[in-house]
Image (cartoon, rainbow, N blue to C red; front, side, top):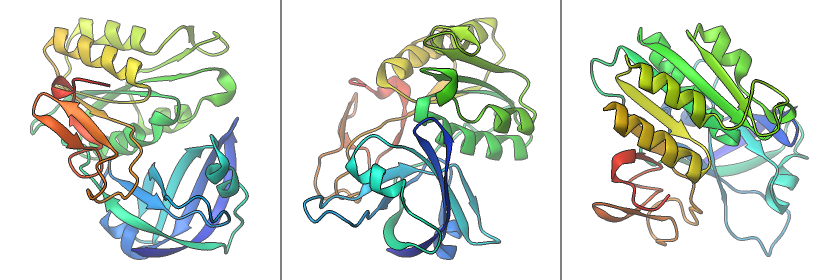
Amino acid sequence: MHDFEVVSNEEIAEGIFSLVILAPRLASALKPGQFVNIRVPGDASELLRIPLSYVSADAEHGTVEIWYAVVGNATRRMSQWKPSFTSDLLGPGGRGWKAPEGTKRALVVGGGIGVPPVLCLARELVSAGVAVDACVGAASASKLVGLEDFRALGCDQVCVATDDGSAGACGFCTDPASELLAAGGYNYVATCGPGVMMSKVAAAAAEAGVYCEASLERMMSCGFGACSTCNVETTDGMQGACMCGPVFDASKVVVW
């Protein structure tokens, strides 16, 4: 359990906010791909916390940055938080990304609010000397996040696709991802976003013979393996996303 204080909370794209919190112990403990379970006060009828991935953690300053989409009452209340607001959260939660040893070139694929965890991973990979390409997708240009961050990292290629064609290619980011994988040269693929998107990325990675991990979204009611509401069907049986995931070996996921 960590108490936290809001440092900033700003809209960075249509319906998507960047929340920066002060939580020193958490900032020192988080690993890319893990999540936090946040208490959002204000409605006694809503008992569950909100599980969210993070995009960056600064151990020196004790801050954690979280990007989230406003999709319901709780996240709508979150979007109204001001600096100095306080609450608490559970974390770090779950299993994060585990790129194979010796990875030289990686592809990360993020759709919508699935961008934060793969961007967080990309930062770690680049700092370790791994070459990274990125494919980013969203419904429209107004909902795109992370493009400048990937470019600032020095990613060799940053491919963009939007459903309506308002930015980048018209279509899904699975298309450029499949093309890059078919061209070869990758040791590792990481993806997060809608299930249909991730399943297509996983299939393209399998065809190319590249190890792929996927971060799955489930309702993690408790966040620590007690309630079994976040189960994922895998080839190894049912596994809780909050403890065995949210990052899974994509080749073992049966139901996305």
